[in-house]
Image (tube, rainbow, N blue to C red; front, side, top):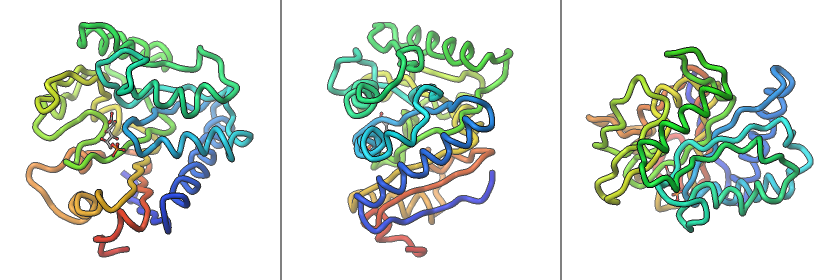
Amino acid sequence: MRAREIRISSDAKQLFHDAAAKFVEIAQIAVREHGRFMVALSGGSTPRSLYSELAGEFRSAVPWEQCIFFWSDERHVPPDDPESNYRMAYETMLSKVPLSAKNIHRVIAENPDAAAAAEAYQEAVIDVFSLSPGEFPRFDLILLGMGPDGHTASLFPGSAGLNETKKLVIANWIEKFKSHRITFTFPVLNNAACVLFLTSGTDKATMLKDVLEEHHEPPFPCQLVKPNGALIWMVDQAAATDLKSA
Ligand code: 6PG
């Protein structure tokens, strides 16, 4: 893994502007270098403002037609469910930009069989990346968030998915939610050319310090994200309050 980079923006507004600029930079380089930008979006609430920035102020800078969108994880719900990560990204960005439906690869999470939904998503990734057996995709960018318990994607502390080393996508049972979530595994996250964590707000400050500056046994899932490419944490001052380096 290249050296971890931590970028602190003055406030949330600046953070999402800075993150959008970074997204555009990576996208433009990827398209220049290999004709397309393979990106996995994160879910939850934090990225909403990033997606709005990309569809707004940065709209003309993004090479939309060469962007191929996946999701790092998805809840086990239909695409029109308020909990759906696909729905959030579609409403805030994908529905507002010049992009063909063929560029959007959502998890078919309405399938009542979560394992089958994960298997189908894994097949879609293998197909789009033209992977050989045992090969992992190399995303140009994987966006991730940090949960209050140190989870990322849908890799939660204590969940079976933390130990997956062969599959690209799994249906991970999350006991506290009494439900499955479909998620990329660590081999996929750690094969990315760039992983970009986006963290905002004072409610994340304690966990952010734990993840970035403390040793934990077992490690928090966020601490197991060690891509062979770049690892960048983009945070605002509120989230960085407890960091030594802030
Ligand atoms: C999800 C995300 C999850 C998220 C963190 C942070 O499906 O919820 O993939 O990993 O990034 O839980 O969520 P917030 O941005 O809402 O704090």
